[in-house]
Image (cartoon, rainbow, N blue to C red; front, side, top):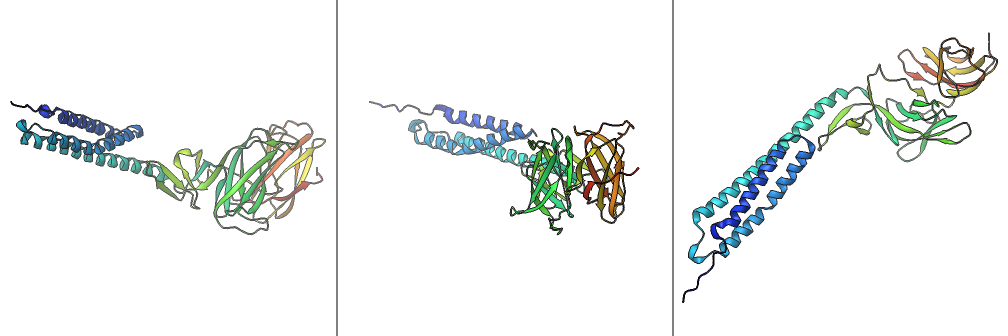
Length: 358
């Protein structure tokens, strides 16, 4: 009596089908690697990892086939060798695709870095919620008010949480800017670096006003290329901002003027019988003094020049807007901005009511 052992892996169909599947997966990975988009690159990488991980599966199938082959019809050695060669080719294709993906990523990083190199030496404005840089003894913030405020206070703290300065900031509706000279309450110049801030605003009744769209302004000193293909800008103080989040870019000559955050540079005063007078104190070196007049709704009604002498100066307003129209008596906001010959902000202090002169 003759016993016949069934052929468990006739024509090696299981292994051949598996190799075919892996070759197709490798081809898909190559197509994904040739696509420069982030989503396709990610998909290609996942495919490569999947196919590479299946090499052990290939070996298990091969071992099982050899273990269970029909002794009367053993696996052909040529066919066995061909199967090994075919899967070796799949492995080589995987390695090629992986190297190609790395080259694509390097090219993307290089292109992004080249584009952001132009930011070096320029000022950028970027969103921030709690920190801002001080460079060269100067820091600047921007923020938006939904309505005119009675007061806006900026509390500045250092890295230890210690309050180093408390500033009064512009109160007009819309986008406002405030600058800090990097000095503490005693007038000591603090080192450059990253400082924390907190903004609070209130209306005439003392009710809080929501401050939104807070931004930091800083000078770009270096650029960084990240592993994910994005770039970041170094503001030279340890503060880094993504280049994709910028609100604005300025040169040194186009940088918007920010109100010096001094305690008495912004005041409210009454226009009575079509006239009002304010006195203020300036340091030496002031080349230009501007006074911005805003109504109770935060609208700018006039911008006037005033005295630049060191010491006490007096500003008088006749109650007229830029068109020469006489405005109604009432409470107005006055913002004093003093700069030197190079446009640098200088402090304006001791602003208070004064007798008007004709």
